[in-house]
Image (cartoon, rainbow, N blue to C red; front, side, top):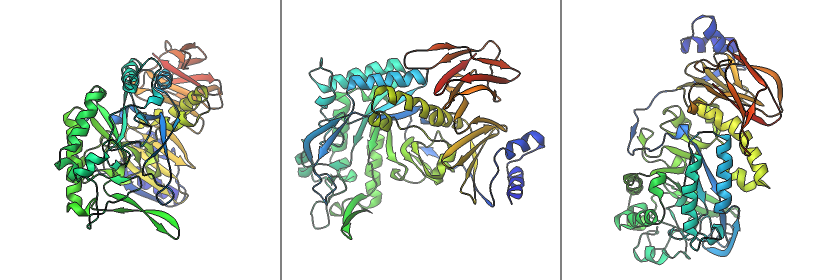
Length: 497
């Protein structure tokens, strides 16, 4: 059955001759294989992206969490309780950015700050006009001065720093809550009672836009911080319906309900029009909007409003749009056959020390993001699944992937570029003469075939990449289209001509 499936794939993808047959045979399906073909949607941008997010490392850094009493159904937030948990200050965030840059030489990066405002993450919305004192530098009186400093300093390390905000939630203790209540832009039931969502009250996009408050919020934030220089912002929980918790069998269960505010009489389509107007206004200021989930899009697959989704599991998008039209950070589900990026937010928040965080970042960059940045350069042709639950990504120019037991293996023209523990992947953002190699457990005299399109000669130089700075690496040789190298456990090197 596997042989028949491969023969069919060979015919389907125009395979000719021994070399191409080797390309097809590099990964073998187990049992019956099913194929989903890539079919480009007639895509149109409604905004003008400032970045190609498929060629950028996008991540978040979690600075501070605003704590709260779980007073609503025993789990959900209505207001802060005055306590904060600090994970990282602005100065520590810059150290993290320096370290990330040391492992990603020359790679453009975008970092969104979580918990930069008021008491931290999810504090005081719909307002976002004051900084968080807990994350500021001692030399600054205003926490926003520390954020401005971080945004400026990060540019020295190929990094654009911007913000993680929310334009849907509204909390009772917000300095803007009364303004929003009096303007009648909060979501309400038909009888006029206010709607509680999973986090506080909810803002009606359509009503807020009609009353001019969306522009007021955006203009105010842009006057406080150089968001336009960053050219991007991340909007969390940009839902198209209200996530409403209800008790079922004694446990809260969330149901998505639309339209957002029956009281205002707006349809779901008008809610989306209001949301689109908000995104267009950000765009008019030269700022891209990225958002939390692929299900938070506007319109059809053919409509381009968000160039990047943090949570990305949409097989429809992945098999209808190129990576430059829609991509993700935390990629999961079958889409992982085309790569997955690291989650810097979790790495730095959960690690016991900055040193251990850098070790984890290095590993995950090499085994996830580096591979994904490479795969994003090749058009997708198909996704194949087999009876054993394995997934096979079929890409242009002889690039293939195998997702098996959570591990992604990559090959080009039948030659392995990454497996479970070792990686040898072109760093294409540096041009066609650079490769990054990494070994989790170490390797001795391992031979890697230089993939087509990459030029390395016997004059190539090697560098160990580490937060302490680059060191020359000599334990490799280039001969007859192959690189032989020895790496210590956890070692990452750049080989460049």
